[in-house]
Length: 413
Image (cartoon, rainbow, N blue to C red):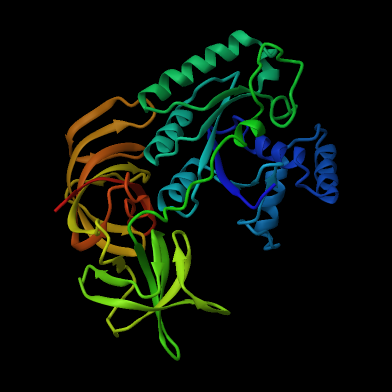
């Protein structure tokens, strides 16, 4: 095994077995120590239950609540091929917030469906979000096959239902796998209970996926997070695309001022020459330009420079009980930029679980609806089309808390 890591998220309707699947993955890969396993066994025995893998996640959550140290960025388990990090998504609202804001950079997803209950509303809504966020490495697992007698006919029926819906989202899952997370069938180990299935297990499927390539070949985009004044003035931020190199001639957006990179600064490191995409770093400049949080740095020689605009077209997922109304002013956040914006037009609203058109030229967007909107920011901001540079093409809207999020589909100059 090398040091490669793949981050993935498990999503689906409530009670379809997400926590059980996570617990099973951790257990079968030897990622839980014996003390933790024994403690969960005691809990289950005291409740008169068999060992419940769902309690693994409850146990970890309880530790978090008690402030016991758990490194959420740690490798949760590994196979012979690579390390894996499961992005915890405890509920559909939390999942949407985390995914859209980019707090968790999933590279793949498992969409879980209960074989007994079949495809539900939240299953479809989560699938829509996966599509909107451009996640194309997807495994569909049809769980709880033990509850339907491991019948192939039932698997085929549920498989057809979910695939018919995913076609409308332009999602083609890499695998559709029948499993029993509780028993362990086709998660880590194969099973004689479903001899009619000759495909891979969940872990074998994950091992075929590719880790997201770092966008080092793209145009430079360095997003400023803060400016520190120590013995020298250090501009800190994150390289979202390309490579930041010492000596680069750069332009700061939206001001348009130019300077050169004097040095790349990393804690306890000397003579650092560059910083690649996805790296948080610091830099010093030849000229003492005024840079601030939210500024975006690009390389002057790149063919494609950022777009500065105050008007965008976007796909928006709304998740607040209070509707978003046309003409309303709300906070717009993209990367480290934050400005007020106006909802200029709501071209159409769509039911996120059926994909049916609800209204055209709408006056408001209701909870859990998806909309095609035009937003106007109070001042020009630096943005990208989501399909080109995702980190500058993804945004959230907030009142006091995050209420919605989406992706930019068109930049209007």
